[in-house]
Structures are given as structure tokens and as C-alpha cells.
Image (cartoon, rainbow, N blue to C red; front, side):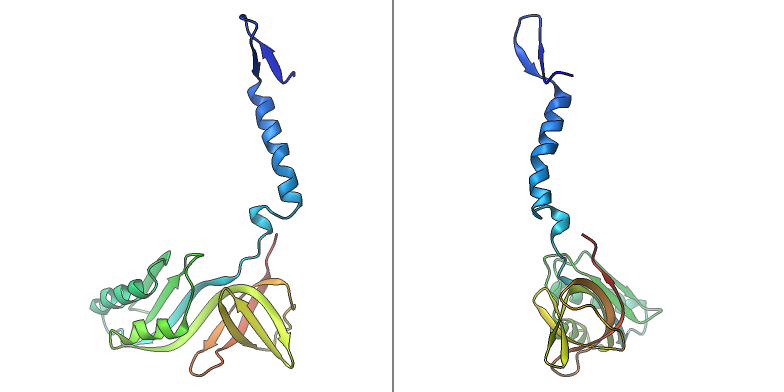
Length: 179
């Protein structure tokens, strides 16, 4: 099919199918060079689930939700479950995570974080005998029995010990990020 058609007035106009083909071919060099959206590694804390002491009834849910919303204003979702005594924050890709800020938001409503579980993506690097996860601007000392691939984009889940620095992530599961 020709890329130009002639109308009755003898004007040349582009064929719509050809325009789409040319647009697709013009994006190909960007994808091959690694500039496409799928070529970028995800590096951030995606979600936090905490076991909370002090959620005693359904009336406790709105104040805790509001306190977490104030702290994590760009969160995609905040769910507080009074049956399971948990609070889950799913973070926006541009929202940074802080364990101290999470704990502070919970303590503002006279509750206490018992346990933090993270879903985070980033890269694990070896520094001496230690392994460190860099996830966005957060850095966690990595522990666990799992042999994690180093310097590759990963997504990890695990329990975060934020009781003292450095914060330690005990990895329970991981998977390689796919390009």
C-alpha cells in the first residue's frame, strides 16, 4: 500500500496506516537503546504491612487511617483491618518510605507497631561481609538464608527490624524484575 494517496483535487495526503507504521518504527531505536519504560529498574518500597497493637475496635480505624494518610499523602491505598490488627500502605512510585515516619504516624494515635513487613524493589550489593538493599532512597541491611543475586534488579518481601539502626530486612521471598 502506498504511503501517499492522491485525492480528486490532486493533493497528496498521507495514508493513516503508513503514519502509524512510521511512528512505531521511530520508537524502535529508543526501545533498543534501553530508553523505553520497561528498561528502567524499579527501585522503591512498594508496600508496607504492619501488625499494630491498639486497634481494639472499628472506631480505631478512621484515626489511624487519617494519621497514615497525613504521613504518606501520596499513598495509592491505605487499609486498616481491625480484625487482623494490621495497617497496609501501598505507596505511590514517587512516595519515599520511612520506617520512623510510619512508626510516628501510628504512635500519634496512641498505638504501637509490633511488626513491619515490606514489599520492596531495588538492588542488593555486597559491602564486605554484608549485603545491602538499596530501594529508592532507603538502604536496608539484608539477612536471611536465601542466596540473593547481587547487582541485579530484584523485588523482595520480608520482615523489617526497625528497632535499631541499621534497619534489617529478613527476606522471605524474592523475584528478579523482568525487563
